[in-house]
Length: 345
Ligand SMILES: NC(=O)c1ccc[n+]([C@@H]2O[C@H](COP(=O)([O-])OP(=O)(O)OC[C@H]3O[C@@H](n4cnc5c(N)ncnc54)[C@H](OP(=O)(O)O)[C@@H]3O)[C@@H](O)[C@H]2O)c1
Image (cartoon, rainbow, N blue to C red; front, side, top):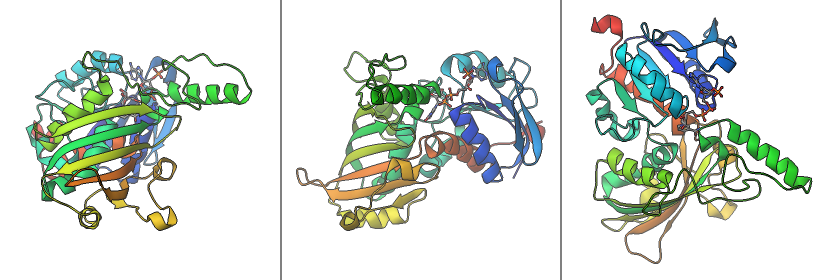
């Protein structure tokens, strides 16, 4: 397997920091790592595999010696910098979502559609954190009993807002509310502390939000099946880390909760936590810092045949973002679909 020269763009951010941690934890085959972030963070130092790394400013020239560039900065910065990385021949992993509408960019969740890595043309896409955990939990069931319809409600933490400023907003508002003072929302349309908001990203003409519609489109794309019915409601909750989902799934044929548990017990990346007798089920605070997608509360939908309901939880910064991006490259290197520039030359 090749070792590769890596860059993280947005290295000081929530996803970037997690990415750096994961590369080291998993002994990712990096021959070098460069960290890029905004001007504000230049000069910040890190240790990676006993080497000192400084945060640098990314310019058009920065990607010349980079094999793999993880883009986990904001959309505006990605739009500005990604073309330079592509031009320099670096393989881009887009975590910012700017390439999402480009059907030529494979959207990959390695547990589901690893083969799609082989058809990359310089850019590979990470689906949204909501889609990733949903398909990791549902694909193993879909493989044995095709899914007809998914109805999902998400409970998304503030760390899933695409900017670390959201964490500060929740903390500041919670303090003010506890002091009996009124708050002024900045990040969201309304107060987030002690509240829930059924609004993530902008509203579309069809009544869904962009985040909800992203789940619809991405789920079909990753599962490679346009005929699956998907309806999503995305809700922002005053939780810092870990996304939860209430998922209702209709299958082609009958399936019992025990059958689903048996299938999911063997599934890569999934852990079942499901014992209602002792209130044992996945929770976002407990999933935080862990790599798996946790599934519990699996039960028959008594109102509809061939249908199950379940509760799915995952660390949005790890499997929902940074870990998935790293796994894409690991899988591509392992299968020789991704090569270093030196080997390509
Ligand atoms: N959080 C999640 O669960 C999640 C999941 C999937 C995908 N994503 C996507 O990942 C991206 C990052 O999210 P995040 O939560 O990590 O946000 P974040 O904490 O705000 O991190 C973004 C980082 O990019 C930096 N940046 C801004 N301009 C830059 C530039 N020109 N060059 C290099 N770095 C620059 C920011 O610096 P400043 O703070 O100084 O601007 C910040 O350190 C977003 O596009 C988001 O949509 C997030």
